[in-house]
Length: 573
Ligand code: DON
Image 1 (cartoon, rainbow, N blue to C red):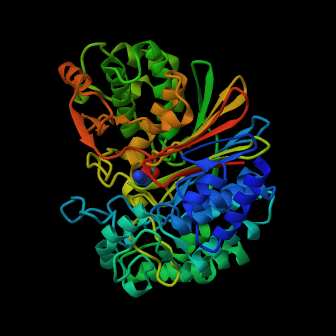
Image 2: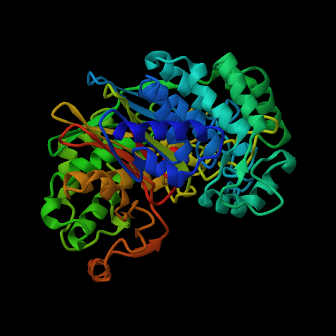
């Protein structure tokens, strides 16, 4: 019986390549949905079509890195708000041998970038310049990242892995209701930021509706150049020429040399223990790993399980930890190729214990009274997307990628059909002036040519007793770190399943502004009142994060948890 269902599933999946996916049928015929349970592998991404591409690659005998490449290029087509060719990201990879590696394919500042590039003559930040238009973009890293990871770990030929994305772009796919809403809302931004709106596939005269077919021919041609010429199909030749022409048409500064010189970097992951589990996460140029490990190490000082999941005491303590961690982030974290990041000190047991000791059990600390770690203590001197994949050998991919805000700089490279990032806004344009996520920074994260802007992306892998336990990550700008932290605590301390942990409403504090942001309904009114009495300020907001994660269950099967906040989809095999 199961076999028949699987066959039907595969038949349906094959049909859906032509762009006529029916997600309800999909749901019934494959081990898929917001939750999926399977023994042989799992793919969880922000879009059902991208999950399907990853699933089919695994079915064809590809490994998790092959599936990653397929998913990444597919997301660039079916999830243009964050999936990308014109952005960057971070990969955390665990082989079934236990070997962990991580790849930083974050965008880099172009050679002509400089510290004052977003300031006017009076030295004030020019509104919007690091966010919209050609000047907002860093040199894209995604294509190099995919090729670099595949070169080391891939098994199927790249042509096989890129082809599904080409088909999706050429033949089209049916957009979801969320996508229709987004494209309609963003129409004016796209019109303002593109020279030739007729070439922008996301602009159309009538309103977008759920189920409309989105065909992207220029993008299909760009993907074909990448398939045929590899890395050079993006960083050189026609695609590079089109990208540089796009820069020149506006106030952009990326040159052919910048593109040719882009390189991803393998980095040592940041690691730490939490209640018998080992967490591995991303080192700078992301702040995610250091901040997450600091949070977990601080949390070990408190019996959060006994305190309960959404009680005032637990929320208060998590908030106080977050406040302190984000203060350190603002001061000490930046691209470690340019800035001496005090890794050891920030993660040392004694520093963490000292930080925890200053937390009152009863009262909120004012963020004005919380400072980053003093230098004399140092011995020496909203859109992104995450996907989680495990293959049938147990190799695990945790990957977060972005063009920064939804649809990045809103600029499509004319003739090449892909969106450019607005990642330059993740640098500190001026000390003390917050970026779009309200994050502060200074010298550690100042703009310099060739430097990578500080990220919060936190692709993470956890082990228990030397075995794979969880693959987790999320979008969400500054809330990425706290969403990953909360998801881990939900599973380890509060015994939630993967789906429960992913669906659970979230809260967030980032030092400044001094407020706990909460999703509507995240915290009971009585608990909110208690928190306010302790001195916390509560700010209600829309959804926080969109976690796509996989848990290894005690019987060795995988539970995929796809976030109900979006179109996210888990498929097991
Ligand atoms: O790298 C970062 O931290 C940001 N550029 C991420 C942006 C993001 O997550 C937006 N998504 N909701």
